[in-house]
Length: 269
Length: 254
Image (cartoon, rainbow over all chains, first blue to last red; front, side, top):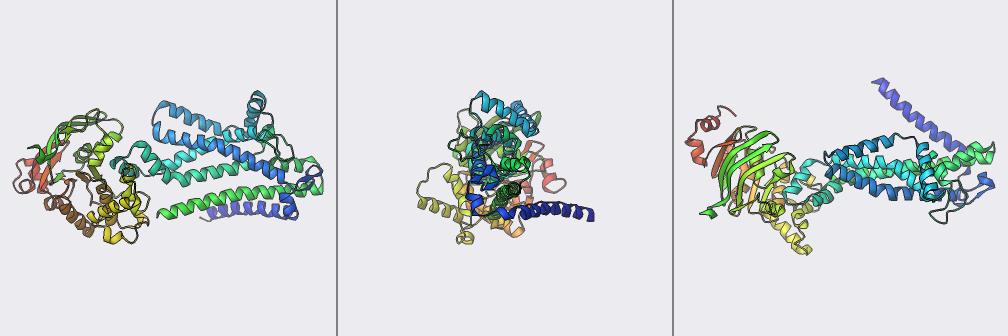
């Protein structure tokens, strides 16, 4: 018993260590100018506003693509495909996709979106690659959420003369919505931190984007470049500052996912 | 006279894959009466009741042969509208299964999916009437928009009855409706059924023989997928014709 307790404590300690370390090293640079200002001297000075915009815009594209396909796919596989062999192939393919290293996704994205489709290093290319990466989890989460809906609800719906689509949309999806939403938000958290894949598809241009085809420098990449470029107090401090902001986004995503789940399960009781 | 028989079943055979669950079942469900179906576990009575509103259709691998007539029309004909059958023949399940919605929305569901009742005031009126008919209105009228899960088991079951009543069925099927309820709640349901039979035709599956004797006008005894005996309830329980029926109702097995 004590061993498990110690293990849990260790995990918590590790998390706290990371947070505290980041805060100590990075809090010094955080101010309004940092969050809303433009970078100067290659990022060693000034703010990270374009980077924040870069991260957010890539996330928006990724979700805009992955959410409908992932949710739709999850619904199809759970409700309509049944035991059809095609559904098993799709599920297997999606699982396999989850194991592909992110740098390989980046390489694929570069070869296909950037070069072959001619989009160049852009928000669009980065967003599409991220969408591919979070697609599997989105489908999975949707399937799990739908599976968790009790069959008794479906039976009740059919017995009242509802069609399959009415049952799925009015009963099943309504019940599964919090779970599905949580999956999307966790996907956002993942996409925010992704570095390897977007490095090859989004470039590292430090200006504010002007279109979906603009190259940007997301926070994750900026952090990496600042930390590895050279030893410079301003750069290092700003790397930590960027890391803190990034962590803030991920935490915000996780907290809202948690809050949504809590609120919806409470309103059902 | 066919208006004496709301539903007629002839030569009904039901298969789950290779397994035959019902063999050559034939029976008449009398209008405005309560018909009880009794028999030991696994005898096929639940399968039988589900054929009456085609709920077996949603189970994969099920095959139904034979005729099930509702007002003389075979509900298994190719061109029949299943959603209309399920409106006319409603069902209440063993475990109360309200939707994770408010009390009001639970009852309104059957009307909303049909889109027939447009005005909110009409909708509210129909919901109220259904809750009154299910003997639940007084207990919930002040909290219609609270979650259905706040109700007790017995109240939830009456909610499920209201949910079925709101779409104005002709037949109500109940599959062991009180088996998960306490005696007080069970009594309320049984009294409710005695009220409802004046306007509806009721078919109830029960493993509780005393309940069948209390509540029903006609009783059918099922054993191993076959209908052994079907007669007026008093006859089944006092003068059964088949020895197997006698053994069951006197408690020698089951």
